[in-house]
Image (cartoon, rainbow, N blue to C red; front, side):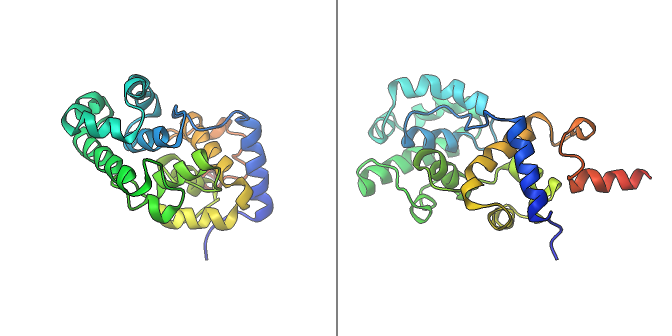
Length: 218
């Protein structure tokens, strides 16, 4: 049996998170679905701050799939190298741009099934695009969402895929997208991977991670 908080406690936790982070939203900068897709591909193992620095310059000149195809893989890699994994990201972005142009008339598809077939796009990236670009309820599970949700007790799984399913089952669908942002904000600001600030966290009376640790100390 999964070690997950009751529906009542989950609602309390979500309300507390909303009080803590009323302005929680996507922190990647974008003006259209294609820019968000590219920015999210670049964000793999890279901070949103760094990605925004890179895309701030990149998107001034390269705005649509055709632009990236014409730029070419080699020159693109040079422009995005500070995001890390430049070779694979550059290749994926150019290949994805070709597919978008050939199969979708340059538009970003709006379904999970189509998105995850694009190079460099997994469920996390697809969910980010679906929820933030198209308003589709979704929970993208990145490292922050995975860590925080399993610590608190919103999920109880060892994999990203199963954590996503847990969250979809434990959280009302209308709150999926907002919860994704709330958990990221909490992970970056309070519930950090190392040295989480449990003692001053307003969620600690409900958090299974904190409760378990407190019992160890008794």
